[in-house]
Length: 288
Ligand code: PAF
Image (cartoon, rainbow, N blue to C red; front, side, top):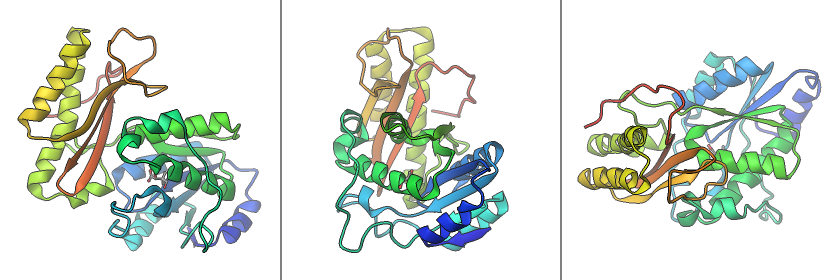
């Protein structure tokens, strides 16, 4: 495994490997089981796996956790080595010293869900992802479903800009109590950690309800009431069309529907999502 900080050097290393399938797993480091499962997907689908580790300043607002974002780099390197990654790309910066002049902008899709409180976040994400695509020129890129809005926006970017790249999604990996794995879970103390597991419980409860009835208001009310009982102050809870992320107000809908939640628990803003009607039998988590 090679650890490379320079974009030119990575391009040079990959130049001789262009006949092989190259997969990219973009990350901000602090790797957990969720990332490892994306890396395993990449290993299955491609010959060469590049993992980028870069905490992208452009996607953080001034009051967010850019400066404290955990960067256990040696641990990340050991995990990548263990998973058989070929290259870690770990640039110091991807932007000109005097600041970036040209970036990408997402329209409608970034004005929903997380984009309402995190203005410009998704512009920062697509800009850095586009830069990474230009450096690595991957055939396949793997993103996690935990960041479903990000995944949807990137799929749209690839389609709108005719990028010759396959975007593959990886399922959300969860703790045994259902909490979606996230680098930010480490900000939680034990009480907050327990409360955080209730986010996925609320989604599970709504899925259960949707199996037996299709009244939108009852399904939403069940989720909201449960979260209130758990004293969780949500940023949003919405049932949306999975493709355009528009909130619906009825469950009679042609496209698949997905439930999205965001809440701040202690110092961490957490997000999660699940399909309203699960096509597969998911493991039920122990919820009370
Ligand atoms: O999902 C993430 O970790 C980041 O948003 C990404 C895609 C690596 C871009 O910085």
